[in-house]
Image 1 (cartoon, rainbow over the protein chains, first blue to last red):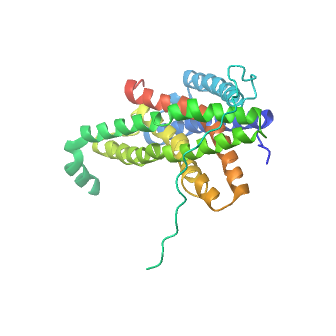
Image 2: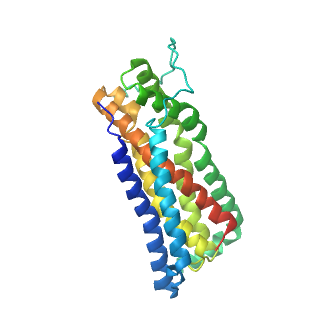
Image 3: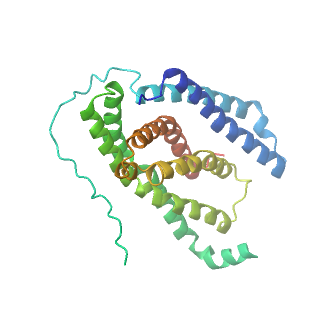
Length: 100
Length: 175
């Protein structure tokens, strides 16, 4: 079974997550402030600019983070793979309970 | 009236409830950091670079099952956080007029809660790797491992950024 991750998918995910979190948080925050308190300052140019700049940074950072984490960047030259023989402690399989 | 009763009974314990909340937020944030960073990620990266190496796959699987176990600390802490948070909101007389708190609550609802719901499924319920292995479901086991890796890829960036932001908002109360 091949792992389905690829750069195009990660790009789409980064965009979707950025819109969901940053866009969602901004809209919900603005709506609550307006509907419950009559505040409209959230729609001023400063909050909108901060939200937009943060979103641009986050979207790019998330994509690059996913690519690095999934070993799509780099060659792993900081590590060596050593073949060793080990005993791995495993939990005993759960035994079915005997009927009374 | 129920809220008034709650405030009457638990109000004097606000600081103790806050202590529990902060303590378990610390557990929630930090309990998996070392295992994730120094055990899980190196093994999974080695697997992604050598996807057919059986020795790496064996270690990957063992590491993932240990992680499924170890995350119990995080998953015990989270319900306590979700209980004590709204309790403090009620007892402290907080409202949506407090901007930093409103943003914090929104981020918890948008980020933390959905992530943890999926995490519970992957680590303890139908996605639990040990259960799939003991059932002899090799295809299901591999599918669950890969789903869990995809979950880490997608959630690591938002968790790192927004968990820190949530704590920052709570402590500095910037606006």
